[in-house]
Length: 295
Ligand SMILES: [Fe+2]
Image (cartoon, rainbow, N blue to C red; front, side, top):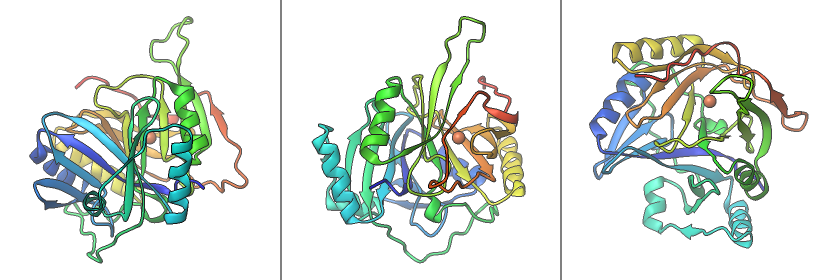
């Protein structure tokens, strides 16, 4: 039984106020607060991004959920059988994350996961302070995360064999260039929803703990307005607008206060996994996405 979706992310920061301003004014998410932490709302769920006061900038964990308790119990038993250290969270912690139950574990490359079940909704409407029409979430989950995975093959096997993910695409990126560059591998993996990839793995280390995360909006105007807001707030634009080869997403990338990037896009394809054949892309983009690693 596969993971259903990416429910939330947890980020540690020394500067909650920078994240609040960024979350509201640039991302267009709705900030709420409880016990000093910042929560950013994207839809009917009480939060999608939990930003915790800490002593530094670090992506803490991705919150993946199973559709129900039976699937969760089978999944966690499978992790334990495979020798993965699984630490159950307390009831209070589960309440804090707005799930019924969750466990903590670490993938073979060191990325932290919170794996749970249960969708708690509070009935409050999502109101974007920046006028974002809506975020594409629901059964698609909140978006995707791209993890650093220096143990690439082992980490892919963890998601595929233990958490029920499937291959969507793989590619090699050539960051040094030249004929001797062996390139670095990337795997794009889907779980049990139509989003092209919910977790992707990149074969290089990243100090912030995350390569990027992606949020999706319904149309080009919402992406364009986000780009205007980012530029107005002097946010570093890490990549210009472009369309990816593999998921066809039209997006741009911008730096977060956490040091990693957020991809803000629309128009990702929603494959039918029963008739889908995984691709091996030899090019990253159909057009655009010019990178600027400075800033
Ligand atoms: Fe992405």
